Length: 96
Image (cartoon, rainbow, N blue to C red; front, top):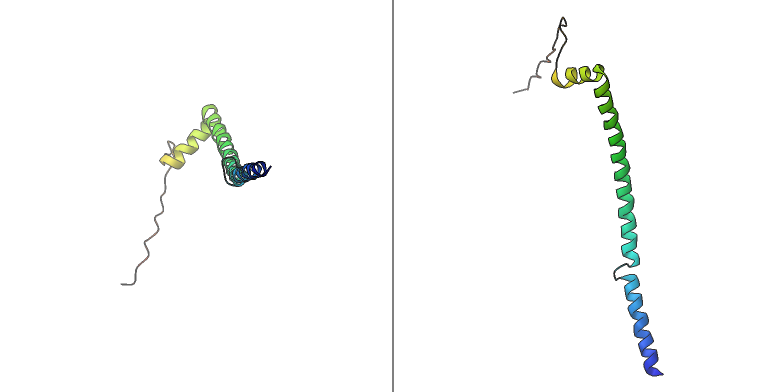
């Protein structure tokens, strides 16, 4: 009877160790849940970004306004007959 009690105690302690510290423990499950939540937020952000980029692709394929806007903003292009004015601010004088 004494051996059975010792064996059951060892078994109980082993199971408790696995529950609290071992693989699949409560701490590991908690960390995985936090990691999963962070990844879900990142996935949602990426979905929003993909939606915006998809809309921009459709806009670029279907109309010239978006292409013209990009050409003006990123490449500094102008139309025929337009005059381009560039205003250069003077550099501030340093007190030497």
